[in-house]
Image: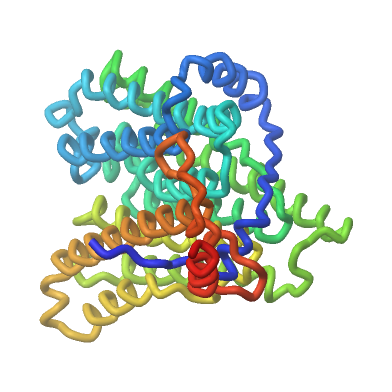
Length: 413
């Protein structure tokens, strides 16, 4: 398969100057998770590349989605004891969830331990995290189910999904403007809650969640908790950090419009998918909730990856991303052509397959291009030999990658 060069020369030059800057003030992270990961990381063989840990953790979450897609495709298995997901499956889900979170915490520590930290590692880690956000949501809502007395309605589940996607984008929008990634408190808390929920479900079955306290079911309690965390914790802290950067004169973008550029694409996607979900001729979100959420998640991840690249390379974000075009064309075609509306589900699945393939191609190509530019192997600790051609990977200001490669060839001979 031909791989592309998605990164522009100015973005590559920006990555050469990049320095990682993050702040983690979460008590759970600092007093529980980090000590645990610090204890565990010496057991990771030094021969394993940090990106291998990152990829393994991501694949464990993908495996959970595949398993639950088989046992609970419509996210309604929790509605009746006859359709409950077997308890032993939740043991496997909990195991995969625990190690996915653990590997995500170990990769950076292992990179520093093996002196193999690089901008590629951060981009790869956060890029996969942007996709995992929607996958985790699908898994946790399988526990409680949708559209029954003790679950939550499908549309409200979709609103919760969008809240999570927007919050993830906002954290990187914050870094785009401040130059510092303030790690959200909610991430490790949500991962721990998810693990506990899976373990309880594995022991007692999904029936354990069929109760109400003060008229609120566990599914609704989770929904309210996520909203509370967003509106009373994550968002206020984000705006506090932005205000501090403004007061101290450290904002990277003085113009209001420039600082807001990264949010335009994700908000357009939000409006587009909400319009489709609410106005669908066949109530597509209700009938094909898994496909619709997977499509939303992968397009959101693609858009967020572009934002991550802009904030890491200190380049100007785009107002619009091409990945929105197939989504808009598909939905508008369904609206405009009655014959196509009769095949809305088929078009949704074709769109989901297309955007997933496009995102995977984008991800693999970008990893290969970055590894080539930085003269490293993406999935090996070993360093490539430094030969003349490697000079092409270190661009001077104003120089393109093609020009640098020609110069390196001349110097080599």
